[in-house]
Image (cartoon, rainbow, N blue to C red; front, side, top):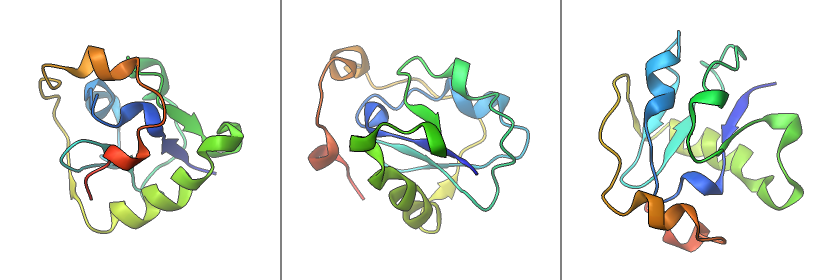
Length: 107
């Protein structure tokens, strides 16, 4: 099992989670973060740190978010690691309230 970043992160991209990761398994895209499933040690430290509530244990993903397991694995191979917290986008709080944002994801 691994942890997965789901849709709530899209365009919010809070990075509080990366600071607590003991194995630096987060990868950063332009408007989304993913977890590298090959690096994640299932510690769950990131889950309570995510202001967007976007991180799930793979087996706890809501049914409509299941595609994010494969998406995290795919993008983790392409994106660079992020290990330090950065400022969230200025409009992150506004995007947090938006549902169905997958089409907004920049690969």
